[in-house]
Length: 177
Image (cartoon, rainbow, N blue to C red; front, side, top):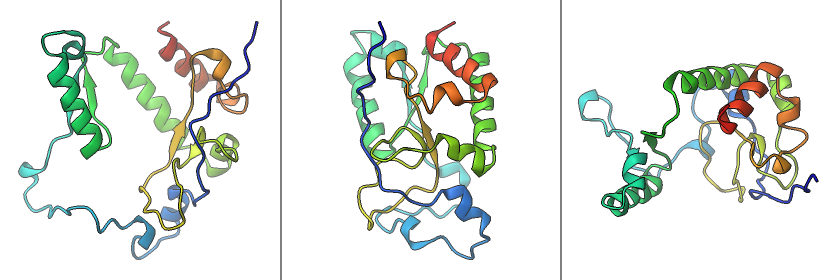
């Protein structure tokens, strides 16, 4: 019996797609994307750049190291908003194939990508998520958020309509087949 999809990752105000803004040959970054609240790095010495946080899944599963790794993950999430996960058990070849397919998706024409746009009141789809204010500073990037599992939560305008090759690889990647 198919269950009705009832999950929602929140809503987002509509903002222009970054790829479209970048095509306009602008002379400066629009003010809404300039983050004065962040520490800016002067990139004269590349050897002193901070490194992306790395979280080890094996340490998260080991009771002796779990607490310290959870603290590192919490700090990475707060300070960076992301981290690299290692020792997760996913074959590196599979990861590289998925990365290639994702790049292919973002290389589609804007018209094609808009077929997967976020619908009113939902963060899933192509666009930007979690934009709650007209004054909010924005990230310089678009995203494609999709729930693949459990299958009853899939949105009919997303996974079923993805290009066949991309859909097949995405579904197989998340289901482990």
